[in-house]
Amino acid sequence: GLNFVMGALRPHAPLPDEAKTGLRLAFEVAHRLVGYGCIVLAAVTMFSGVHKAHDLSHIDHVAPWNTAIIAPLAVCAFLIVALTAHINFVLPGREVAPKAPSHDKKDVP
Image (cartoon, rainbow, N blue to C red; front, side, top):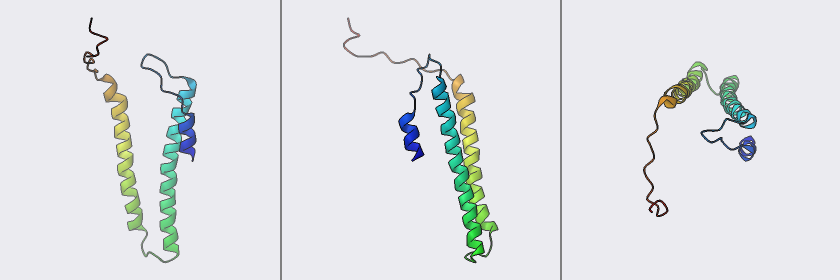
């Protein structure tokens, strides 16, 4: 539900030569907080489910299940950090290739 509301209220991204508005910056911060909050809430839900299953004697050992939860989360965390670093540090330094000339009839004298 919250994603639909945030998507409907999302301010437009600024053009390359424009600065971000305060509303756009607030949206970007809220978007990240909601996204990371959902990941944390999902992890807490998985761990509590494993412990509840152990309490109800559905599983004998909690450790393998915790490992099965932690390993993918660790991989995802690594990928998030690596991609964020790539986007923030590698991509801004790249030169953008010039646009190819347009073949529209408007450009031809």
